[in-house]
Amino acid sequence: MSIFCLVDDKYIPVYRIMWISALPHFCGSSQCQHEGDYEIRLEHVEAVWVNQIDRDAVLEALEMWQGGLGPVDGMDDLDEMDDLDDDQ
Ligand SMILES: [Zn+2]
Image (cartoon, rainbow, N blue to C red; front, side, top):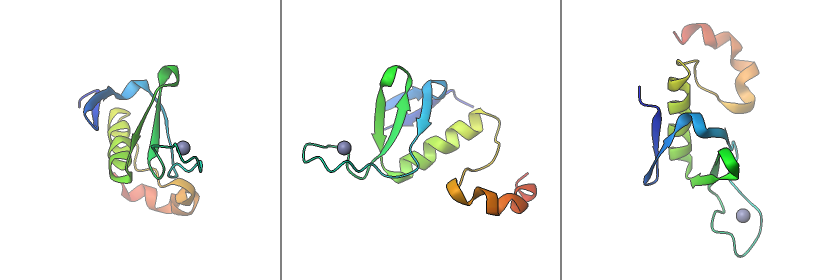
């Protein structure tokens, strides 16, 4: 298992990822280059922006790095607790 995940044209060490947005970015600014993208926040207030497919791939890479704890499906998690036993 690599400690890097490929985001756009960059290999990012997964341990540098602070958080990953659950929802696409919307700020309403006409200058905004990232409308509809997902933010991956890194240390030192750096960030990379990706589409949903890449966001999910990064989430998966993080899960694998942590030892494969299972997918994170956002707000539905509590309803799916019963299914978690089947994941192994
Ligand atoms: Zn914006």
